[in-house]
Image 1 (tube, rainbow, N blue to C red):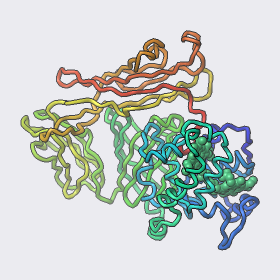
Image 2: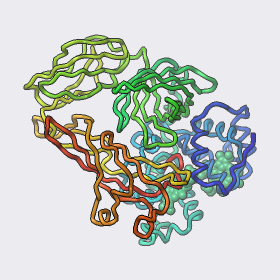
Image 3: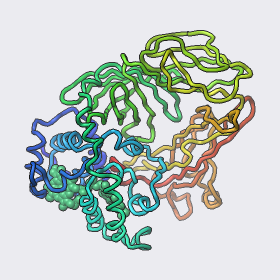
Image 4: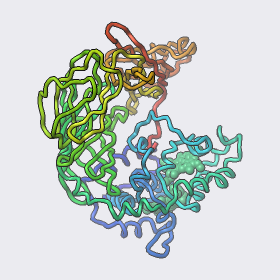
Length: 526
Ligand code: HEC
Ligand code: HEC
């Protein structure tokens, strides 16, 4: 089916259509990529030696990056391409001109849609390139100097007003971009990198991922979960996926779906869990998968996910990961190939093994009253990795994320609200006086005005509601509110306060949340 995305279609709609396309392997096109490149791209992109095409053959990027480039060809240059053909091209280009796993290290948060991440690039890069989109969008591409330069030219040609905007009108943006940024980017993110060639020749075949995977996860505002993900092979690097799991509070986490593998390790799944469509963005390498699984319509609702293939040996997690000195509690070890006796370090005794299988060990633990506060390395046989925190008292509470953005929505419009989701992290003081993370604790939550302005504007009353026992904040409706000064919308500037109870003593932590307008432009890489 040939469907043209009209240029009048909003970027947001395109992003949604694009995202669905990337995660659904259901119908793989029969037409091969070379034919499509010839028939749909070559009209504008000049053929070069070795079967190459101008521009296209001189860049490497993630599947999301390729998808965005092609989507831009559609919205800006009038390219006509069917969804099937676009899917085939993204797969082909990501496989042959992708990024090595090491090239995505440290910037996967953008692919995983952790939109509250505070980035740390050098000042020049942040100001020159990281003010309209994430710095990760830049760091997830590889090009020679000439292609970085063309990208700069394209930016100014397409958005000439960028020179008058803040962080550009105070300097010669174009000159700095060409003279400083281009060489820097070509050096930092070069097209030719041995890591990619090495990955291409050593990457395992996708069927290596077929089998059962033991997983562990954590969802802010809900808690920890564990279970098994079963993966079976489908055509052309695609899979059928089934998840069966449970949260620590006993509620189920079951679902079915599909996934596709790009670049030999970029796992993108689409799994419906209890009626809700969720995306999986994982790095799948050997016997390990790691990443984030989030709701398609609400990417702020997502869980950190880590999995180990059954048959391999790995200790993934200890749930919960803390214990109070002098107290007794039950903890679960999650992993694969778990055999032998678990050990929790000095001052922590295994009172009883309640349940033991290769994927899960449930034990009753007791910490001695005089056990030293601090972290213990947990081992099962020769396996190690996770830690257990032993604490006497909580020294401080941190709200995570410390800084976040929630968004108003609905109110007659089609854009959903973006919730705030928080964890209260307890921190202790070790014998050496240094702070150490104890873990996520239940808390009582509230919001307060962040400053006098917010107080005067009654942001607490209008911006939304905090669920006291879960740390989930639901913003107000979109649109003008006649009850507010000058009928402004329900935006707000709030403190997020968590109170954790430690043996009758209440400790509080504080974060900062901006409640703002809808994200109108929401591309796959922010
Ligand atoms: C109607 C003309 C046209 C067609 C058809 C077209 N492109 Fe382009 N393409 C352009 C123009 C113009 C540019 C340079 C401006 C820009 O980057 O948007 C470009 C640039 C690019 C770039 C470089 C972008 C960057 O970030 O530097 C890529 C990659 C690309 N095109 C891929 C494709 C692919 C793949 C196809 C076929 C599916 C395609 N194009 C079809 C006109 C076209
Ligand atoms: C004025 C705002 C602005 C600035 C400043 C800016 N960008 Fe962009 N950039 C954009 C927009 C808008 C897009 C297109 C997004 C889309 O395709 O939906 C884009 C796209 C990109 C892409 C993806 C292109 C592709 O098709 O692969 C890269 C890479 C990129 N920018 C890098 C940079 C770099 C490097 C700098 C600094 C030299 C920079 N940007 C500065 C707004 C900006």
